[in-house]
Length: 425
Image (cartoon, rainbow, N blue to C red):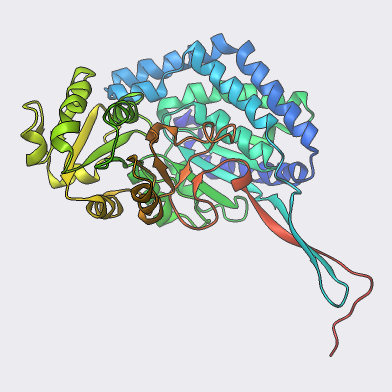
């Protein structure tokens, strides 16, 4: 497919863009019931075509294994009947969410009688560039549709066949609801030049959302002529305060690191207050090691368990996406906050403590999109936040921060109603 299309790549991308722009006009005024019907029909198609989706995924997995992808990346790529059911349920959850389009955010009257309202509207056409997780195809397409946007998706080469199989279900749902199939499109090639073209399609694409590793995000931010809603890497921390409950500290740390190591909400660094390190760390280190996690720590941590190898400076700023964790004993809460703000990616960080004042200071001073108290970082997910699904976790500060759901895929306009007012000279 890549070879077939490479000579005609620019015309192909222009056709996708023009079709998306046309679809976006129709979607902007589509009734909520029609969009929700498309989402529910797409969910039904995912269940109905589960065997075809799994077969496509097997093609991707076989190719990925031949290429020597790491186990964590294979897990991100792999679909199972349970994960397909989760994709379908996610589409239904998006349908069940309130429609953000048309929501009146504020309304007021001026002394001259002008009635002014601030109203949510779609962004338009959204280009989403992502890597190996095929469920992003459904999440991104579904959320864009809910918010009245057309979507142009560019999946990673690893998930190419899986993503196309899921796209077929999404487009079946659109057709059943009487909406254009071009409302959700997938770039039909693995040619990397397609990404460069997408980043220059400023007349056809309104926003670019990259979801992947640091190299992808940095390339998009450097090369895009289109506003970027960035999802940076998940360099997440758990900090065990001196007032942490030992069992809570153990269970949260183990879950935050090991539930699924290949997701962006997985904890990569564990920080522990020095006053309780000797008491809290040994059972936690043992539990992590028994679960198959490699331990890298500072000198204080190494002294507590012979399985801990020496952590380098690079470990504090590494997103492993694997069963590896960096551990550091810190003097106090202030040092933990300083470490997170220096080395973290502003994604998700959690404090475990029974000291309410310490918790509130952590929540206020840690500069991350999601800050947590006594909870696993693996809850950093739009579905867990009640959004139905998410395109990613935005780590920037403009427009949207944290899980990007349907509401975050809208902007607003001002609607002004008058009775013939003119502005005096």
